[in-house]
Image (cartoon, rainbow, N blue to C red):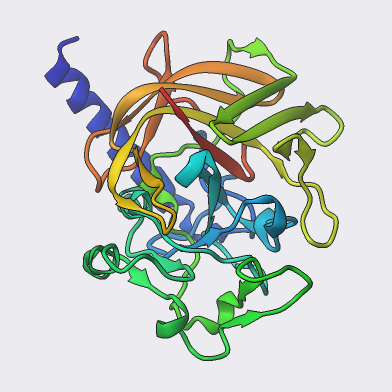
Length: 319
């Protein structure tokens, strides 16, 4: 099949997926559970919703985080000095409190273009980035633009790792649904794959390890060598883990110490590794433009690769 025919086929498939999503829109969305079953049997969604994305601190003093276990999708990206930061996306009912909240990056603006009018909660950004955030197709809700009772500092963590947000107080006009545009599909475990018990993804100064738990039917999350838990002691666990290999390059931005802020390119195509049900699948990802979702297909035949229903972690690894 030629390139043009292949693109047309993917477009038709995408339209069919949207139609299938609409057909089950009356079923609602359970917090922390993602959207659509490729068979249409028991996937859950409500069409046309706005998601809330929250930038989450992920250095040692910021852990354990609050509300991360309720996210529908967790993105892990590289920031200055090779460290990591998280973006938690809530497409259903968000938890009462999320945090610690930290600052936005240029990478977030391109990443969030695949969502329909998302709200972004973040602690701020460097001055040169603020005009780009204002011009982006999203609703920015830092402390200065949110109601006065939405953000608060508390707990035992030192500043700046003690800023939290109450999502219900953001006045973000959140609606159920909102993940339809991502390109993700959910369904039964596909054929193939290879048994996998553990996988580690390394950044220059951070690492993520995902260990399969047959008892919990989830991938237990560890960060920087320590098993990850929420503030109330609940283990962090994902139903699906995506290791997405991308180009990570220098940007025009730097932090206060002069470290360059890396930019993660989430538009384009490349290789991926999808972990679900104790197995690993070689995959390819494709996102033709910022307004498109990211489609994951099998590396051998180009078929859409369904995720297991539940929380998805996407870790952007350097190609």
